[in-house]
Amino acid sequence: MNDYIFTLEIAVRDYELDSEGIVNNANYLHYLEHTRHAFCRHAGYSFAQMQADGFTPVVSRIEVDYKSPLRSGDVALSRLWVEARGARFIFHQHLYNQATGALAVAAVVTIVCIEDGRLGRGEQLRQAFAQWL
Amino acid sequence: MNDYIFTLEIAVRDYELDSEGIVNNANYLHYLEHTRHAFCRHAGYSFAQMQADGFTPVVSRIEVDYKSPLRSGDVALSRLWVEARGARFIFHQHLYNQATGALAVAAVVTIVCIEDGRLGRGEQLRQAFAQWL
Amino acid sequence: MNDYIFTLEIAVRDYELDSEGIVNNANYLHYLEHTRHAFCRHAGYSFAQMQADGFTPVVSRIEVDYKSPLRSGDVALSRLWVEARGARFIFHQHLYNQATGALAVAAVVTIVCIEDGRLGRGEQLRQAFAQWL
Amino acid sequence: MNDYIFTLEIAVRDYELDSEGIVNNANYLHYLEHTRHAFCRHAGYSFAQMQADGFTPVVSRIEVDYKSPLRSGDVALSRLWVEARGARFIFHQHLYNQATGALAVAAVVTIVCIEDGRLGRGEQLRQAFAQWL
Image (cartoon, rainbow over all chains, first blue to last red; front, side):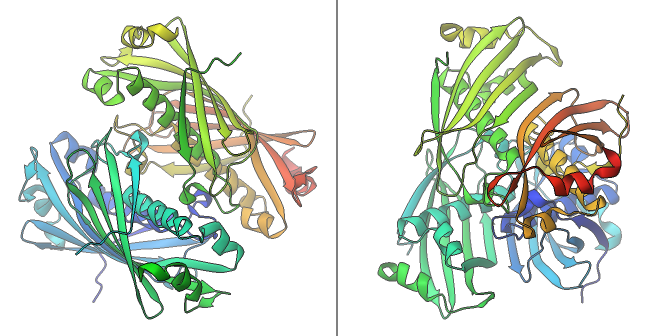
């Protein structure tokens, strides 16, 4: 089902906690974005390079299920796989608590590509991700 | 359709922009949370009071459609309405660009209530929100 | 002593708290930056316009004394005055708890100006701030 | 001079950049705090344990010199040493660009300890840090 193609370890930082002592809901989106960007670098096409090319992937939709909270001292295993649907790229992303194996967050993130200011076909990403699509 | 019951003005802060000059996708969740908390205070039951009562609303699911980006100098009108479904509260939240009227973000946020460490019925919230349910 | 020339109200947002229930030390720098940028817009020269002009003010040094913490529900009065010293601009910034009048944070922030990639004289800022220097 | 006793690698995350493409000034304080907390865990006394003990270190003053910006793709070596002065702990912290060796940020951070709601002597920290003081 989930044939992950990339994993990043992310240690919880205490400033990411809110006053309940759990990672704030918005910060998981930071983890997810950081993982996608690390994957793009791994795929040979860094976000900085994309920007230099006038090519900007943007998030168009995100669905996140919060399953169990991460806390101080926890390390997340952030895993993803990706599929192309027309001009969109769908990232399936999961964060697991490394120590317990529990699923913390499950997300589906839809990316579209802005090229020269307009919605584009994302050919560069399709090429960079070719071996995984 | 959208019978908004609460509106908060939120001015974009420049540190919320990312390197593309648009508000980073995670920061919209901050706007949404801040609006919900302001609404709870407006409803007479502040988040701080909830915590003091051992009552913790947590986000269990979020769906966000990113329609048009907010930029430096923009002010968002952050609007919401809420419904109760069993033990869950569903917030329907929209961010509009105040100057243009354009929809920036549409979100559906599901909240569940942790009471004394367990999933609860959320009776306190149901009472606080009674006139809007 | 402190002849403030600008004041901005900033309501604490709950996600800015850390697990102790007080605003995290880094977030005060966000408040300070947001206040400086609002002041620049008030002075007729927005940060976005500076960037469009290839003119980038950057923080070169910051000294912050944390006097009393801000908490959930607090509103800060964020006040500043500015002086020019050679090519540097020194912002004197204070955050007060609106309800109690207590000083929360006192900061001295040194700004230098990058023009076309090199350290510049900051003439544009000097002109924008002329009436207050 | 700088006899560092702890080093942490911190990879820049793209959401930490601001619209100029450099790490926002406030985010370096996040790096510095995360390093101190990692050091405390390394010293056998985690921040979570401190909180459980009713013992809260808080930042009372920070001085930061911003020397050269970190950018997308950079990795920081975050190094520190600590000294005790009366009831205060002074952390000397430096962030280096791993690839170039350039100093990015130099900071002096003063910590005081709140014990049962009042300013304390910080004996627990003094013991935890004994071998390095």
